[in-house]
Amino acid sequence: MEARYEVRKHALLGECTVAPEIFDEVMPRLERFMEPFVKSFVRTEQVEHAHTFVQGLLSDLEHKNVESIAYRFGQDRLPLQWFVGVSPWDANLLRDELVGQVGQSLGDPEGVLVFDPSAFPKSGQESVGVGRQWCGRLGKVENCQVAVYMGYVSRHEHALVDTRLFLPKEWTKDQARRRKAGVPSEVRFRSRHQLSLEMLQQHGDLLPHRWITGDDEMGRPSWYRRRLKALGERYLLAVPSNTQIRDLQTDPPPYSGRGQRPKRPWTGVDAWAAERDEADWTVVDVRDGAKGPLTVEVTKRRVATRTEKRQEGPEEVLVVLRYKDRDGRLIKTDYYLSNARPDTEEAEFARAAKAEHRIEECLQRAKSETGLADYEVRNWKGWRHHQILSLLAAWFLVTEARRGKKMDPGDHRAADPGRHQCDPSRSVRMRYTLAHHRRTRATTQA
Image 1 (cartoon, one colour):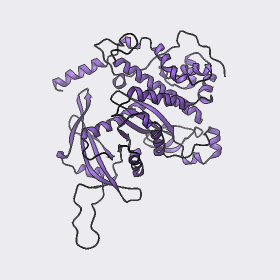
Image 2 (tube, one colour):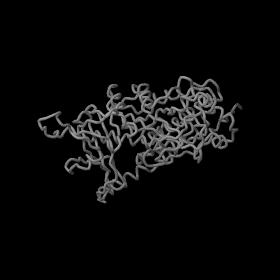
Image 3 (cartoon, helix red, strand yellow):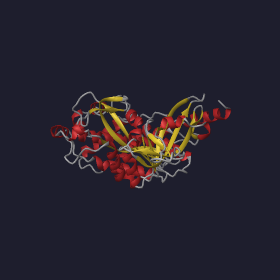
Image 4 (cartoon, one colour):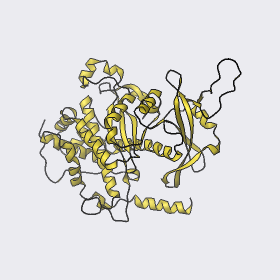
């Protein structure tokens, strides 16, 4: 390692040191954080249960389900189960408040909206939306639930803001199963891409952004990319390695003089990238790493893709990113399609692609730190209640991480001495062991 990179490494490690002062008065801050979210509740016990459940999601419990959280705070589990699974409070009101706060705190004209499906393996058949479908977590078709998450990434931070549960067709057509799981009558079958478009149309104006990104499941259908373009959005969507393209920057085969003029041949994006010379790649610094700057190699090309009807689609830009280790060995290659201008800089494409990976970090953080996947409810309402409360807990961790980086957080004193500027969202696993506030709460039995 070069000397300058060694110095930078020690500086980064120093920034990751979390001073004890950061955690002072965390409980009063959590109380204030919850106030705008619980103001829509009409019953006092709902407010109390919301505080209890979010505290449990932020605790060091191994399994953050209702029963574990209730026992952690010495409560009967039935009232908390009723609050999460049955109580008629509207999760959409809490979600709208969350979207507004994220847009106000993290909003940036250069922001990126990311859509990412995530699966939750299940063993039974009674949970709402469960079925045999592709489970990215296991890498195969398995019995699971699938949700589509919407995240927001800006230069300030990144956070999850909304989610939709995907209901397979066999669920939407089975009325008895729908009634048993409490699926509202107005809910109809929506593909994962349609669910993302619904979230975009609902929240896009509140979250300033320049890009729409997503993984190769989101980028595969050409109709989805055309729909985003029709909405005036600029996208950079990952696509599978076998996606067929026509290189528009090469000459078509020579005309023989008879019949139709030949067209450029179809080729897979992986085969096209393998044929590129070293001079075709541009090296872009992504971020600092422990062993030196992390870089990617980027190349782009004007192409046409094949539609679902096997016809030639509109012109797009193919962007290929490849990652190598320190010894120059290829680690992986990612393929993207975009409707951006062909003269867009490679660094800008790399920035948008990096944002797509940030939401994977958000999902991992929510599953490991705020119990996103620890729900044990089976009905529609309970699933939505657990999800929104978990997203709120994750957003609280983001606000605490940002507070740790600020010199003047507005809590009457600096959060940390000047020699410490921590970034827990990237380097430190933040897990709070919370207890109830010293004020005793009386919880009404359900």
